[in-house]
Structure formats: structure tokens, C-alpha cells
Length: 278
Image (cartoon, rainbow, N blue to C red; front, top):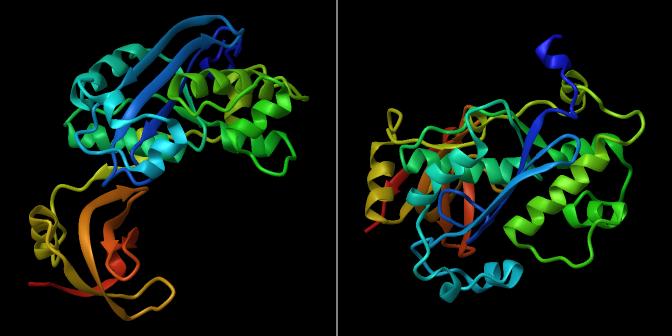
């Protein structure tokens, strides 16, 4: 039998979810990883749950969502210690990974792998949000909405392991929607493959012309830059650069914009000029 024609009933999957200190992987950190390993027939093979010390305070806005506080993560291991354990849990075999809005979770893990000099997983990844959009017609495709649609959720906990379990239950029902998805090749027809290599890595070395920007990141010093994108192309704005991430071949600067006092992302190729501020 062709490998891509294997029955989903016998394939292994790992549904995983992260809780974080914020929305962007360059400036924010992971505070919890949860995952469940199972076969396509629904048999649960193992669970993984770990709180992490992010090495920085958890903003109240994030704590209100997942309920994880600074006190809860005090004394917990760091991502450096947990990454190898999580890699061992997902294994080096042919398991398919599942994440909801996968670019978020995969992006965070990819950046942490880059930051910790840890090889990123080579597993294929399915975005269950995209799969749901192809299989259902709903007002929105949040994981909780899908859980209520299928009657597999009672309360919204927003914790990593409970969301991973919910993700498993939703996925198993999505593949049973008519016409049912029964083989691996049919699964890829409904959900294009994603990879960790595509969804984010910190760029360590500056491209020509951006050497001083890297110095500003290292020194945590603000810069004044002329940006040719956004709502006011050509405007000059003051930002404090946090880091540069490469996603799908494109480079982005993550920075705190002084005008709005918010974290924003800027395409590096649209920064026309910049200078460090005193």
C-alpha cells in the first residue's frame, strides 16, 4: 500500500496547544504546553502537560485568558529543559501534529527551537481551523465554537491540555463529516501540509545595511525609522526593536511602537531608513 494511502484509523496524531505571555513569538514566551497522542480510531496513547517559567512577568491581559499567574509558574522548568521532553513525546516517528490556528503555536515553538539551538520537529502539521473551514459552514471557527457545534465542550478552560483534548475530539469529528476522510492522501487534499521550518525562526545575522538595527536590538535602544508600509507609507516613527523573525521566507521586525505604545510587526524590506536614537 502506498504510504500516503494509509488508513487514518491506524495513523498516530499529536494534538497540542500552547499558553503564552502574549501574541508574538519574538517578544513573548510560552507558559504552558499541553498535548495528547492518539490514533485515528480515537485510542489515546499518552498525554503531556507542563507549566513553564517564562523568565518574565505574565501580563494581566494574558493571565485573564488562561488563568496562569506568576505564582503558578514560579519554580517550574524553563523552555530549555522542556523542549527535549516535548520532542521526545511527539517522537521521531510518523505522527501527524494538529494545532488550531497552527501558525500561532508552530511559530512560537519554531522561534523557541531557534532561540535554544534545538532542532525543530520535522513532523507534518495540520491546521484544524483551516480543515474546519473546508468541511463546515459556521459563523466562526474558534476551537470553542467547534466544540459546541459537536457537543464535546461544557466549559471553556483555555488551558493547554484541555484545549489539546478538545482539539482531538473536534478533529475526529471533522474527518467523519460526509464525505468522510479515511486515508492519509485524502487528508492532505483537505488540509495542506504545514511545517515548523516554514513558520518562524529568529534571524541571528543581519542582512547588509541592518547591522546597526541588530545592535539596537541587543542594546534594547530605540530607533527612528522611515517605514514604507502600513497606513501612512513614508512616515517616520520611533520604535524599540525587539527582534527579527523569518516567516515563509519573509523577514519581519517586531518592535514597540512609541506612538501607540503597542507591539507591532514591520516588514524589514519596507524600512527605507533608520537611525539609533540617543
